[in-house]
Length: 346
Ligand code: UT7
Image (spheres, rainbow, N blue to C red):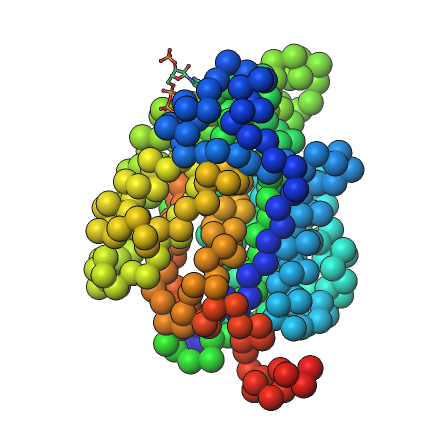
């Protein structure tokens, strides 16, 4: 059986920071409220109005290519998980394909909000496992500032802009790669977290603009309750299915929506704080980008064979967990079929 393995990680973070102190000047909030309720201190904002999600996604993809030492023409498939595509169509994946020069690749966007990266990783892995493709780029990218109402304190303190990307390739052996996945959706939660305007139900009009329907809406406490249950349940489920205890897990790689949700998941898994990837304090909730951003930040500490549990909960509702065994040590560039000699010669 062919397993898909992550063989490189890339990212893009805009330089501009929006701190809790900045937000205190914009809405009726406080640094303390934001930190205690969410764990967020600052987030990044892509302020250049000429740049959108595809720009960040393409930069993250280019970093993956550079770290893996491969040409854009080698990419077979590009999947972009996003809820903030540059346009409804064409797909952001097509814009990324053009911008990075991945001439042989096909691609599409995948909409699963905060679970977008997990769903895209699961989808990309099937093309590797089937033998259809050798190199699949999976990107999670969102310019959340484009759909955030900066007069609404309930949501504007939560989100940031970023992109994260990974390359999927056939694992060299069955010891590493994506081992299992549990994925769910429940559309009964659709109205609790959504952007009501702009689609075919509420096409743009003066009325939809006046009603602020082109900004994201969230019933925070309702989503919070489901997210705590959903993420903890699914993490526990995938561990039980694979006979893993807390001790077997090297890291939990959780979606970064709220520190309290992450903490509840870790407690349920029986793992300590040191085994949880958390960067919500620096980037806020970047929707589809949170999980690959964590992998990027922790990459240097990861070792071949490390058991990782990726878990998410988001709009839809969508949620899930992926169990994978990490495929390479540290930030070693060029994991793959080549020998070390070939790599140093290239
Ligand atoms: O990423 C995809 C999935 N999303 C999530 O998982 C997010 C889930 N939800 C949450 O993380 C939390 O519900 C929030 C962080 C969004 C909100 O935290 P909360 O503890 O659920 O607060 P709340 O909405 O119940 O609000 C508590 C109080 C309210 O005031 P009253 O009614 O008690 O007087 C709010 O008006 O805090 C008020 N409040 C704020 N105060 C200061 C809400 N937002 C703010 C704010 N600053 N930014």
